[in-house]
Length: 323
Image 1 (cartoon, rainbow, N blue to C red):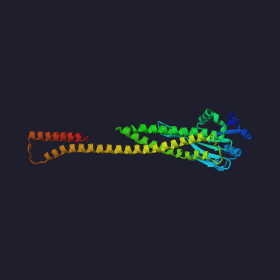
Image 2: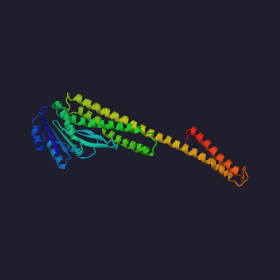
Image 3: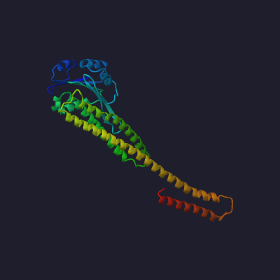
Image 4: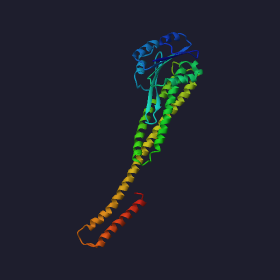
């Protein structure tokens, strides 16, 4: 499945024309072309490689899944790989969508799976059509702007999920304790995955701004600086959440340790209370004469001793907050 667009002198002139017409359109030096490939096969890659003179290594990177975010320079074009991110609030997992792009002097070729929302990128281009005269720099900026905005939204939602988790740290129910443990480790896993995707974006955007191909002109440069600032904010936000997650995990361990100490105090207190009647009954269980031996009042004295000593220990432990 392929989508195409043709810009001439900064105006959208045609859409969804055949791929075979691209070469004819590019003969006009005032045209810029966008080609989008969804789930391409080997024949599609070979056709695009022949049409635009793309490097074999770039084709391999685009066709290989789970490549790291990066920017590569070749003789006739630039290649970059990035990831759009979504966050599942209920499960705490990330939805990761890979998108690759070949940037030539007058063409942008995007490659992605069907789960990537390219319509959002097209809407961004249409919303900033006054910048269309800046060629492929404008197209690449719209694509990366959507990707970075999605990453920022994912980081913000992850921050909200961590704050919500923090509120359940001191709940005493077994269900809440298990939920905090599972949720915290899942969110940490998502954060580590997000960090691997976000941090390389700094080199990617910075490399486009300073590329030897001069894909970004002076008028588009402020927009790329703004995009780079957003990338830095996402990276810094991610690093702060990493510290926040570590704090939550440490607090959870501390709460569990305090809870365990409290349980041990309670167990020890009850053991002391039970030990008193055991000692009294054990003493009176000796087959030796003692005060009240074979007398009814001797039994009453032992019962009263058990009750008084047990109640006294209970009150003492309760005052010390051991029970």
